Image (tube, rainbow, N blue to C red):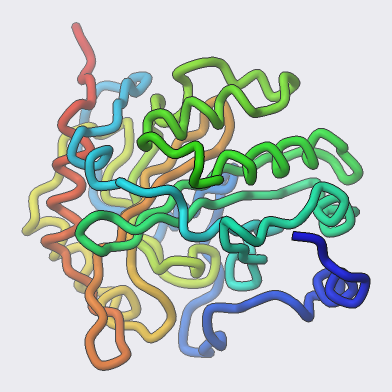
Length: 284
């Protein structure tokens, strides 16, 4: 898709962004963040003690089989501001020249997300972030090549999609084969597009590899009504990876009822168990 000069001007000034909803004033200040992860230490759950280790994660078959189609939307955000992300349908991708104009001056923190719908109807997304310097031309390669991987004509399945992303990334980023979704850092619950503004609760990390049960997850979520019922976006369970670059995937864990998104802790626990079933625990 080629954008005319007026459209590009609107994007560059922020006028063409599509916020998901107005920002309410009742949510707390942004959480403390480390390398792009929203780790709110005041909200951390009591850790399960385990051996410090390097994660060894693989996507569960239940998830791979649930993603049956190519992304219905791709989006790009700067500095983690997903509420003002620029969103495109797979048949409306901007040209490379237009991307260059949109990225100009914003190359330091750029993230791309691919939005899918699971076979059961829930939302699922995969994202990756590139941290660099202002004016870094490799960021254009990163975004342009990632966008092209979303084209439906090339769709086979989720593992193949990740493999194509690995092969497509610029050589300077050193993303080798079979490195995406392998070194799991932590798992969090939050509101989609609201990670830097609202409550985020960590429910698992690689220093405490025992999976919490449903009762513990429910108890630790009790103090955060913003997660239980909101009119912003759906709540999701997000799996974060820091190597070879910050990337993540997330699955919807709320139901929409009369205009509100209602958190279902049982969905969170079910997906947590499925996704950690292949996690390799340390060997003494």
